[in-house]
Length: 134
Image (cartoon, rainbow, N blue to C red):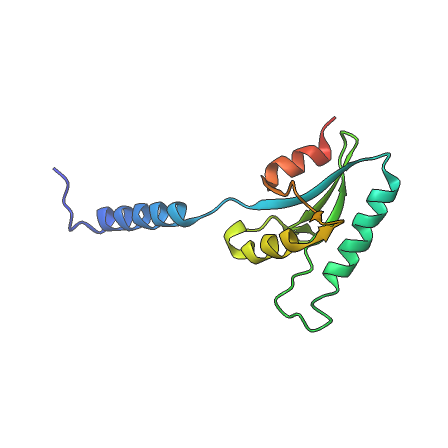
């Protein structure tokens, strides 16, 4: 039988408790794919770059909650992703922390229709794979 008062048992039990609590509350890092274009769609890609610059500048313009995490990623498979959450050292975010970003982007319209109707979250590991696929 185990001696629950033994210091080793207490340390193991404490470590297991902390591990199970942290894994239960940890969310995977994800990237919000705002839109996707083919590499040949130069005009659309230039628009993405322009919007990324504009969105990333919101913080400097007084919108303190706006984060400069927008980027345009050229994937190996011939597609270009306009993303939020993969920029510099910020490579993946917790989606529950940025629900307002999705809400605000969802409000943007182009010709009376949603500008980004196909936004979706993708695990950051999948984005890294798509950046480096052979």
